[in-house]
Length: 163
Image (cartoon, rainbow, N blue to C red; front, top):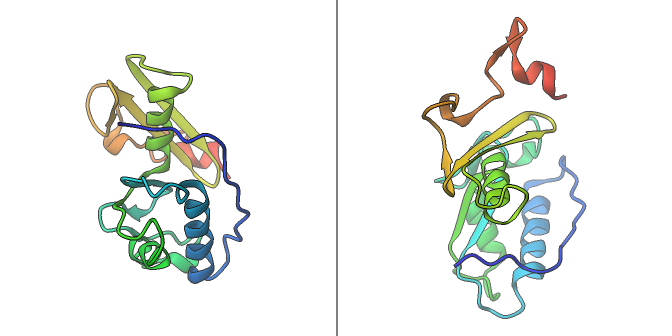
């Protein structure tokens, strides 16, 4: 069962902060959002690339550089030791993929056939969803479901679309 929690939690985080400061801020935000009833079955976190989603390790160097090579899963779980989130399974996914999946499940693209989501920021992100599943290959899907490195204008799309 998927549940969308009411309300929002906002934290301002310095992307140049230490790994401990980043992990503590994110852990506190999750506790504020999820920690009230002790009924959280699992937690999913959307993160930008490069990130090893299966291992929970960040390989980012352009933002949150202090987390480069850090086991973010382990760090967050350590922060939650002794709280209602202690032992709750934690999974990671690509931010653009999960944004698009969220729009398919309950947003502007709710339960439509196929959806593409595009995110712009320090990079060009993309997510492809069909039938509630993230696509990384197939008809009309670029390799790995990524648009950032698609050839465009003598370079790649990201060179022209983000900054």
